[in-house]
Length: 134
Image 1 (cartoon, rainbow, N blue to C red):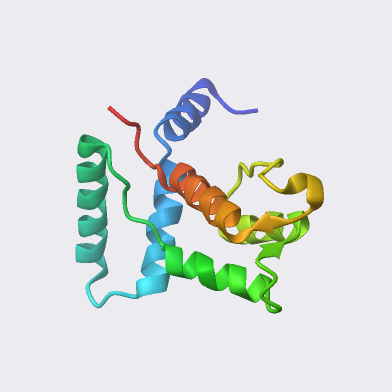
Image 2 (image 1 turned 90 degrees about the horizontal axis):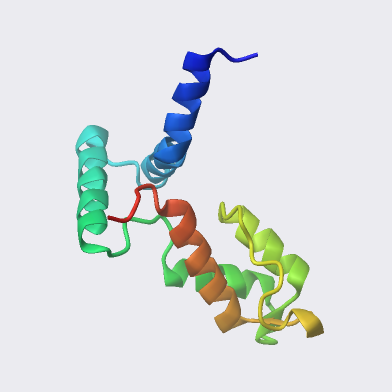
């Protein structure tokens, strides 16, 4: 059983989304492999600070072109839709934990490209929001 001090520390980390911040920064380091990792991390933290102050989107590992590529892999026949199972698997693969279980098109088991991108962008925003809005 955790001591009160350990529980307080865990609560603090969770409240301020520190594990998510460290995970995002580590993923970006592995992806970009900058020559000067400390400077890169400082720049990312500065971008997060600016995003927090301005209410804009912070740094993220994936962009819309990446999401288009993921969808294309899941839809090689270019049917313009994927199944709910593919949608869930793709979002999970992108690191999105709180997936919308009932996206547009779920009733026909046809999730469109636009719905996939919209849900992915929103999910990535949520999981990369490693700061609280002012």
